[in-house]
Length: 327
Image 1 (cartoon, rainbow, N blue to C red):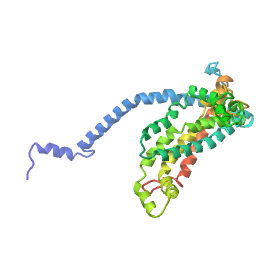
Image 2: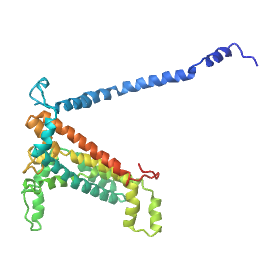
Image 3: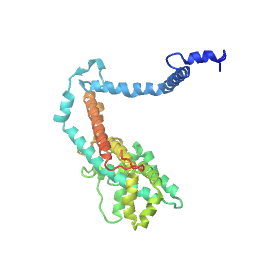
Image 4: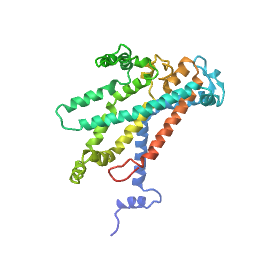
């Protein structure tokens, strides 16, 4: 059948070598959508450059200089790797802060996650008023980073505080916990563990996703509650445990506010609460050694990156997903 005159131009257009007309139009549409996307992202991109990327690059440069914040940046003296050499070979406070921070993270983070999981298991039931209890347990996480809470905590654990008053009811003599080098860091750990609300909520969400059929099948096979927890709950909850472990470990290494308030900004008593971030702050804003403080910050960033990489590397051996594939 012969083609009409109206149909012939479209046929000739479709036979033109190269990209078809529809494809050329769709490409222009995708390009315009991409431009629109970048326009909407531009405030975030500008903020990323101005608030994060540029200051990070500037701090990297400063870490190779002898610079204090009271002088113009143009007067910074280039010293190369001297700040990093001093950090590892000639600064006892650095290694003290590393020891304190690692001790805090190794003890407080596992206990915090254990408490959060235990409370989540208790609240994962259809009890009357369970929503109220969930809110009350989550409340400390909302105010956990505040200076006011840290001040209250210090007053609770001093010699005349509420904790010693509670011990006195049982005839136990208290002590100034926050002023005792043997116990000051432990009071910070208790404060961190008490703020288990955020991981608890995440654990609750994960428990809701565990199929009840698995518990029913395990019960039919004769598994008790402990065996169900070990063989069903923990494997199904392993992605959530991994998520909480990574976040809480990073938060544990970044602890600052409570240590600053408890020690009045000194890391005392006897450097027992000298967290890494507090030591970094003291070097930069008290001793005005911003070049050295920047070097401390970059080593800290690298250490956090290595720890996170280790978690992701080892996670494939114990993190299991419901689709049967480990990642």
